[in-house]
Length: 143
Image (cartoon, rainbow, N blue to C red; front, side, top):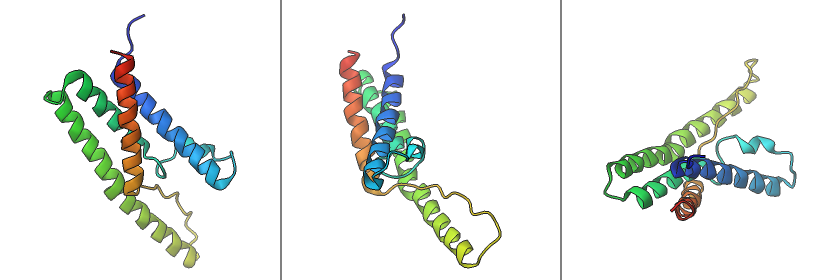
């Protein structure tokens, strides 16, 4: 069997560990194991998007070098993803909550939509930190 790409392994591990952590943290806070939705929902601690791109960026840095074009591209990609999580998605989530509250207050007959949640800066930092650690682990395991 051929070797599995360490880049893909880093991406998958970043996502699984971050989303799994999100489930554990939410279950602990809610004192319930019924929150299976947190295995796939966006928002909350830690950012799975940030963990995923940071894991990929770290593997690229260690395997291909920080002077490579691939590292430059991955850095841009990671920066855009993390900026979007904090600034764009977080802002639209706050607007969604305000709209939802207004609809409730006005007793709107329109079905209230689910509001997607972005991330607080700390959630992105923790997610990125998880990603860096996993990227190092994947690199060392596939050397």
